[in-house]
Image (cartoon, rainbow, N blue to C red; front, side, top):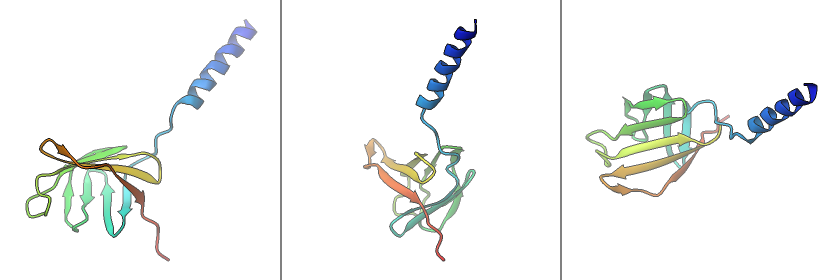
Length: 109
């Protein structure tokens, strides 16, 4: 009985180690060159400086670029990869842009 328990504990431990860890939350400031996003739950500040809302989960964000923006009507999808890395993809109609890699903005001292 004791050996059975030990093997089960080892199997559970190995399963936990093999499972990829997800970053805690997509919320925060994201940078790519001079462009920035600020996400706070469903609220977002897009690179143009406009504040709006979108579809939020802890690990992803989606919005449609509003009228008046140069990319109006474009869907923007974001998903967090790690605490410091996020991928962004844009789709206009059936055309998808290449995936962009964004990083957490570093504090300026």
